[in-house]
Length: 136
Ligand SMILES: [Fe+2]
Ligand SMILES: [Fe+2]
Image 1 (spheres, helix red, strand yellow):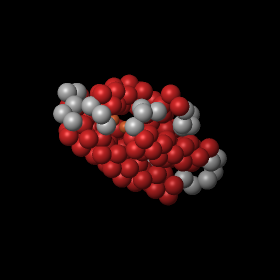
Image 2 (image 1 turned 120 degrees about the horizontal axis):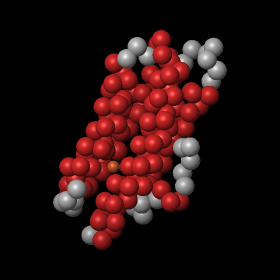
Image 3 (image 1 turned 45 degrees about the vertical axis):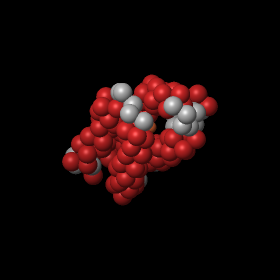
Image 4 (image 1 turned 90 degrees about the vertical axis):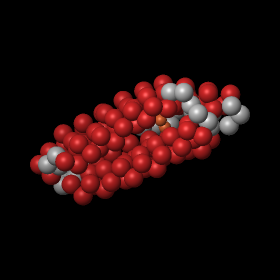
């Protein structure tokens, strides 16, 4: 589910590397999901949520900066899609994670898998073609 596939490549090496890092965090989440329910997952969940929160700030900031520099016309709607994932993570952090360990892990995993796939293949590939045309 969180494996890098060549079709995910957008043709810009640095962006691909950052996306690989996001997938890596996704597969760490999957590892937590696979632990049996007897296992207390609280610390692992908190750790992955904090890594995801940090990494999305970094990656989205990097993309948005680049898109601003090249005056990408769809920047605002792109930012909104980033915001959806940021808000999802913030919402989860407000929940009682300890009592809902398995459902939260599952929920976040499915959400991220779907979001990554659609956002990278759709919106990120779209801006990448624009940037490549601009000579990036
Ligand atoms: Fe991205
Ligand atoms: Fe993006």
